Length: 287
Image (cartoon, rainbow, N blue to C red; front, side, top):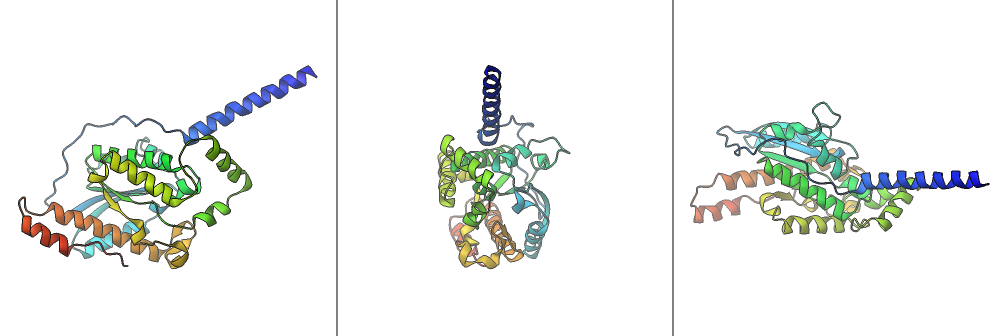
């Protein structure tokens, strides 16, 4: 009997240790990676070629969005070089770590920090929300991604948390996954996990508090779609955009980049001209 009790206690102890390690590894807020290269001057190009990176989860994978952005900018007279790295189901933690993964490692996006890019588009959030990682987790890693891009003189283009079939996605999870998410939401202080607005508010507040928003192009996804249920034509399924949705998002991203390009090319002392230019270059919400 005593042997059985000891074995039971050992099994319980092992389970607690393994569970603790798993939860820590999944939900912990790790420290920032050490920069792998010295800061360099921002690229000032006399050509009309824009070098653009795309990082994120499955929304950044594939070639459709690359092509949409490249074609749209070419239509506006700008050639591009695009470097795209997406990892399906990646949380913001993985997306951040991928920037520092060794070249050749699956989903490594280290090229982003070493190709003297002008802009880097960040497409993240759906996997964080589906996995109920919490608003604090999401905001923290978004801020690290944005901050480290800026340290490398790459202008972040941050697409805010998309609207998608959040309830459909979480309802379709297996029983064990649901149980894990419920337990983690109770024992880990990651912020709210039940509302997409909580994720948006948390990251917006953190970017304001750290002044990262001042140096970031923030693309509000609600200008693509503000209600998943009413605009399902823009979605392939509950968690991914259709081609029509990608086209609308891609055009909106391009417009925000062009806005910044126009502002950067204004004369040094153009009080009157600046107002005229600003009034003529406005984000387009339509597709």
